[in-house]
Length: 220
Image 1 (tube, helix red, strand yellow):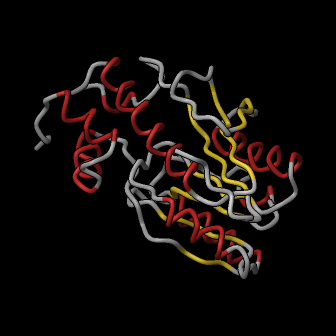
Image 2 (image 1 turned 45 degrees about the horizontal axis):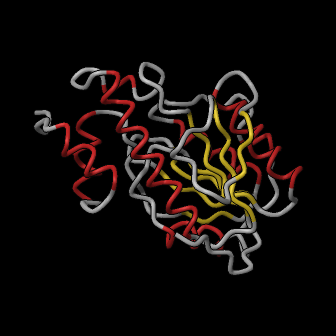
């Protein structure tokens, strides 16, 4: 795939873990083995990076915990994650991207392989007229956060991976009085049921093919 540029004045950052068995998607085990969960994680990461490669961007970045592998596409800068908890690492990813290139930053994770270049392009477009763009997740978190100018106060100490994480983020955004836009809600792949629901939405994806190859039924 030829990466799109299109003169877009925003960076696209993916924050991710290397898909190593036992280190990723541990909530998928069981019903899957650690190796199967890692295979699903790699497929999700590949699909996510493909969407990023096809969306207009001033720069594409992978903020990585671990080592890059053959799944890394050309044209994507790799930077090591910094910080302790997830909120600190997200804040650092925004700061590092801004330091390298002071243009708006759109950050996503590796847990929504159904993300499309069109959704990413819309996030970039919305930052032309808004300070913050949020993509809410169905588990109460968020799958995307875009900032015209990164503000560490939005994420500093924010409780993560909770049903109210997204609501707490929106409270901070409202308190800051910044112009905000929302994207459609997506589902993070955290459980086996999530994996099957997401794969059904993207049947031609690597993620769906990987899940189908495992041959497991949808959990009750």
